[in-house]
Image 1 (tube, rainbow, N blue to C red):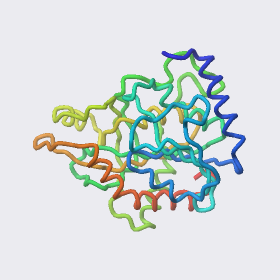
Image 2 (image 1 turned 135 degrees about the vertical axis):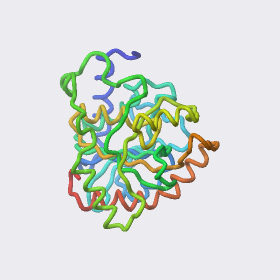
Image 3 (image 1 turned 120 degrees about the vertical axis):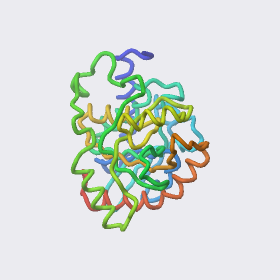
Image 4 (image 1 turned 180 degrees about the horizontal axis):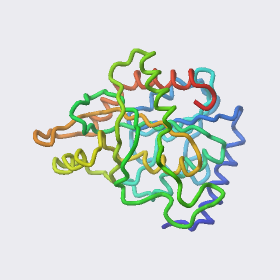
Length: 282
C-alpha cells in the first residue's frame, strides 16, 4: 500500500499548510482539468500559481498534456482553485497518491469539486466534441482509494455514493448549457478503466453492455475521495471519439487531445457560467 496511514496523513496536512500561506482568499470551489483541457486555466484571474514540484509531497504528473500546476484566482468573481494536470493509476501511482491533491483541497476547505476529463464515447448517439455531464460512474479500476485503515477525521468508513454527482449541480450544468446555447451537452454514465492501453473492440462492446456511455482512465478515484470528504461533485467529460465495436477504427492520443482542445472553449464557457451563476459553493 506504499506509505503507512500515519505518514500519509502527515504529508497531506503539511502540503495543505504550505499552500494555505499563499491564499489571498478562501476558495470553496476547485476545478480539476483533464487531458487537453488546460485552456480553462486561461479563464482564471490568477492570484498565484505554483508548480506541483514546489508543493511538499505532491505527486508529479508524467503525462505531457498535463501542465502540473495549482492555480488560485477567480472565475466570474468567485474564488477558485484549479488543478492543471492530474495523476493517473497507469502512471504507476496508487489510488491514494492519485487522490492526494483532493485530500489537500479538502483540508483547505473546498466544498465543491468540478472534475473534467477527455473520454471515449461508448454511446452510439454521441458525437466527438459532445460534453457529457456525468450522472453516475462505474469503477473498473480494480482499486479503491479508501482501501485500508479509515481516517475518521476525513470521512466515514463506508461513504454513501447513491448520489456521487450532486443532482443540483447536474441541473445547474444543464441550465448553464442552455443559457450558453451549447447544443451538444448530454448526461451519461462514465466508466473508469486502468489503461494505459486503449480499449479493444470486445472491451468496447462489453463496456456498452455494462451501461456505460463513456470510458476514461481517471476521475473516479477523485470522486470517491471527494465524497468521502463531504464535497459536492460535478463531473464533465469531453467526448473525444466514438467507436463502433463492429467497425472499429484506430485511436490515437494525439486525436483525443486535439478534439478535447477544440471543445475546450465550449467547456470553458460552460464552467464559467456554472460558477458565475451558482454562487460561492456552486
